[in-house]
Image (cartoon, rainbow, N blue to C red; front, side):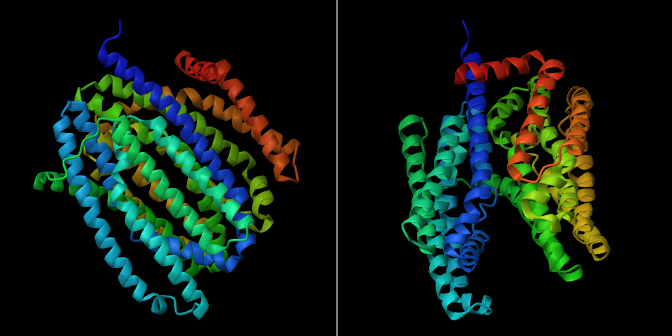
Length: 510
């Protein structure tokens, strides 16, 4: 008979597997919606209206950064659960909700100040565009401020390992938003309806999460409890995660500015397409990272170091299967994809995207090591890595971009990532977390590399033999290559536990 600990671990593994599948489903839907729905929406409302819509969202979003507090809720709550301290968990949530509410009020005050200055900030817009932007700004700003105090909901669901429910809510939000937006546009409603639909669906999902937490979990909140120590611990953790987010945004935001200053607007467009592809790769590959935080926290709390290394290798191999297919597939077939997707004039974007995604061979397979930094409250080292990447990237971009344009900027970011997220972070994993990274690379990258080389050779041969002139035929060709890749993995590369994972999924879905 299984013990309670074994039962909990089995339940955790089941939640992670199904949650990961639903997460990938949501990501797939989001990418397809972006490729198919967004161009149609722009055609319906007009390029100028779409620009104002995105401007209002981006303007408000600059002030709605959660400062790492959502991650802090997941981390600290997982730790309380691992220690069995439910009273500490309820007190912590009382502090967290008050903190989020206080920050929401501050954000509201800042947004009011920006609203007063909109005409000055965007002096180049016409009077009618300013009026439209103000209305959109009020709608989006109100929605963001109301939503902000509920940000701990996701952290609570993650800490309680309710990944299936969390990803069901996330998928429902994406599907409902697109369906209702399409309906609103077909009925003749315009720009304001899009913002209203976003707010309506978002608020409905939050209400649903709140009701679920009250009725289906043991979550308790001591709203009257206050602790300077807890506030200090939260701010200490969140300040580092905020620094990471700001450094990453800085790299992405400053590079187009550098290109605009030294290489011209055309280089910005070329770089932006590569950045979009890098964003898709990162989203797909990092989908399962947060799902393991409670499990990793239990392992670190009970000093199960060997189990942690085994988990790092097991998850790293799965992530490399996915990352390897995407990166090697893009390396061999990406030029044709870029030409069919955005046109021959963007051929340079192939090299930009390739340089941006290349570090993912290492970084995107080490999500468990990064999660361990969060679980052990060593997140400051990831912040140091982000600063290294930002510093190296900006300096080299300023040097390379005048001569090599968008490719120079991409090479600069590649070198920054090599020094920051690869060399420095692997030193941290080895020396600070005491993880056997040599064993990780041997069991993960060295054993899967032959299959990836075969994938690259097959992709190159297919491209040389069967060039196509439609995106549909290209996707069909890519699907056939992916199917062949999966067959080779099954015959020569998958371990027995990995085969059981796939057959288990197939049995449950049949």
